[in-house]
Length: 335
Image (cartoon, rainbow, N blue to C red):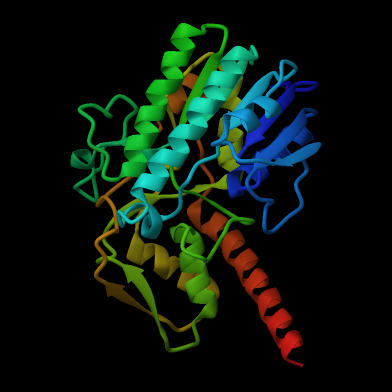
């Protein structure tokens, strides 16, 4: 996996996964341009060059991807956790913004003779009818049709997958790699504000709770998911890009857990005396979702195996530290 001397652009480089990806690519000897609407809120980017830009604007994308670029990693999207994408309150923005970004990126990349482009799709493309049983969801890569994602975010991701395949057909020199991420988590990701995902939200709730309190789990807590630690996500992306397979390909853990048990795991890590309170929530998403890793094992000879408890300990400790810093700053301002 020698990426040395390659010039790459990471779109969404100010985000959680994008920031980790930039660091990994730099460690492998690449020249990296990071691009986002914002800088990462928790760490300084390792990119050689970081550009603040709006990828919905074709002219800005055209200026960012030039003929010298070998590879583009397209992670930019309008997205968030279930409280953002499953309530229906942001559907038009999610579809409009993400579609515009992908249309611009593909149009420019094909015109500038980019050799290879990675697209981060999502497990949200899978049909709801295959995810009704929390103990036996079906998320094989060939199970997306007949299509019935449970959110407009999932519909946009499915459309964009087809868009990337269409550009690859019409511009064969533009190689594509399409990955379906399954709930990536870890340090340096947002943990409040409404766009955080379950692992970060659960950790924040437990850190902030006092002994004897209740911590909220949306829904009945019996819905299941799998969660992938960010380092393994990045490893999967690098291996996938170096393979000959176009995808789509699941990049996720197959260690499934229900939400109440997941919260209990975090409570145990905290060593606090807390109880779980389940609350009704119409945006809790599908009943079950788990990465099927047969294809990734077949195509890459590898699949994630890092235990959820090990990754969530690291994530919990990082969020606890960040919230401690924030508390110290507030106290200092009040002096």
